[in-house]
Length: 216
Length: 259
Image 1 (cartoon, chains in turn purple, red):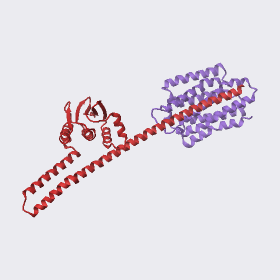
Image 2 (spheres, helix red, strand yellow; image 1 turned 30 degrees about the vertical axis):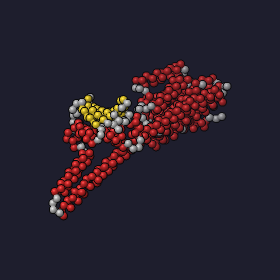
Image 3 (spheres, helix red, strand yellow; image 1 turned 60 degrees about the vertical axis):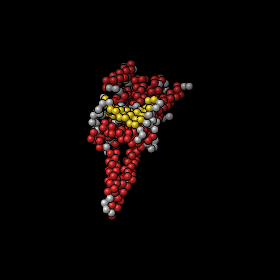
Image 4 (cartoon, helix red, strand yellow; image 1 turned 180 degrees about the horizontal axis):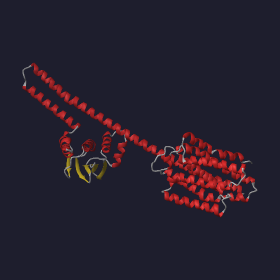
């Protein structure tokens, strides 16, 4: 089973969100994330297919950048103050860096760090994000489908829940290197979840309002 | 079960969990919005009823004035005209002139009464306390009910709107008590303390409790009570109806008087 077309589609899907942002002139943090995502996916394809070099370092760095984008998107909505935000983010980053960069090697893919230090917080933040939507003070959201923050939480919780199991089992994938069927299955499931997240970036940018990300 | 199936099943369960959370949020928000819509619709309905009550109150007042002018003043003046016309044809008859004078006095008195009911002059000139004393003497003269008014301390001159609203509410309440409650005595007591004007009205007829009052103001009709609600709103006041024992009911109006 060839996964190449899926990889190309997955790499191109952030373009939808980027174009939405360009046409609507809504250049938010998550629009820049879409650009970073698109650039990274294209970079990986180049590194892997054209230059045939090791792309694990780029992958590890991207997880880190992605984490910062999402953390900053949540910053004013679920963290009580900047101090709390800085402490939590620093601790998680440090743990990830120690686990991936020192305990293992930054030139290898070890996704357990991303699963534990990034995906688990994403799920918790999304739950808190949904909680803040349900009980926000300046009451009434006209409809959830027009709330960028709701779409952001939906995209991220689906992405995190879908990928956490795959990340956890990634070490098994490394152990079973010869098993191409397993590799294909892993990639297809991950790419599907990634495409879903990338498509959901469109309503996130389309309905983006700065104040939604700045008030509780 | 091999590892592949386990991974796929785990991913599916996690995604299902994520979808469940999203579904729960959407469902919850829909319920909240539906609930808010219901509250808004009830408030709109109540607002509409209050406006209607206010308009109907004005119309009834106009009708009352028109009836009094037509049936009382108009009829009396027509009689005077008739007397004067008949006296033109004969020599001046003193009794006809006397009768005409009496009828004119009656008309003047009727017009004064109408004017007094429209805007009690005493309220503007002497304030709420004197107006309530006057109201009690009018009721004592004109009905079988005994009304006693006492003020624990002399009431200061209050804001015109507060004085008029409180006076009108007490007029409406006493009129309702006389009409519907079969009371034989009513007492009104006023006092001012801690920036509040407190009016306590006691009577020995069939009265209202707070629950009955809340029910009535949401029902059709009860124009007088809805007008009271409007007046209470306009001066940020509260009203409380209660039964204090088997034979006595109490109404308490609390009005902030400090601006």
